[in-house]
Picture (cartoon, rainbow, N blue to C red):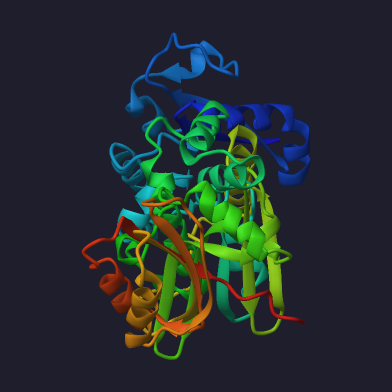
Length: 436
């Protein structure tokens, strides 16, 4: 039986999952592929570090050159994360004629064009299924299953850390800080969680989804992005009373006048498909011309889910090697990719939740309502708490659907009130799922 040797860059959480899956599912993989897949070399930082998965010491090395230069290694799997030296290792591997599998969405978001162009020049494959939504096969579904359909829109929950935190706040009444600590203890959040909770990770993933869905290469930093750090238990309580749940949503839509991309927390109607995505799970709702709506759901993080996606890519590369198809299958599903800048959100319309923090003084409600009206924002519903004397008021306002540029002008005016207690909290309110 033919043997395909892989070199693993990194033996951390995901790398350990890859080793375990390849070993535990060895016979099944051999039957599917008609070849044996084995780990030949593993790059690590510390040879003596304890690992969750036992890796034979003879395979370990602290010298990347031993992996990249090994003539038997046909596939290099990059799982060290970050930009450098991951970028250098991937480029070196391709220039030596090796195919690449990676889960590094940040690297692809910042240097994807360079990497894909180099793969084309070298005639090798680059696969990156594990870079978005962990074990959910969303990229392969978009690239292959929907290849003959026209994708019009997608929306989803693509960051398990943010979803875990928001879900704990909603279901357990946790504060943001307590939910973050729980996510870190469960292994779903890094010691520095800023990339996840500020929406940066989701923006990188959304850029890859746009590449595969629309053939548009977008700089993640150009995507309008809002994090979840200002979400309070108060927002979750209000959402529950109003029939919503707070989620961090990534959305993309292609229109005649351009591409719209955004990441932001929103109130999602209970009963909607995305409202029932709990814990660290991810879900992507795709709307395409022929199929209509389709949902892709599963665990978005962790050793085994992400490791499963990596192994799936390894098998895909192995099939190409078995059939002597050495040319690079276009990972973005488009022969021609266009550089794109997302259009601004100014012309978008939405209903909104506002919580205006003002002092408890006569006439303040009228001042707020007048300010909104002067900027073209109509009030659908207004409610304020009844604090004690001299305590500030949390004034909850639901707006009618309003253009984003008008709402932003109104928010700027509200936050310019000289006696404002705190900046206004704002969440978009998503419409219910359309009826089929």
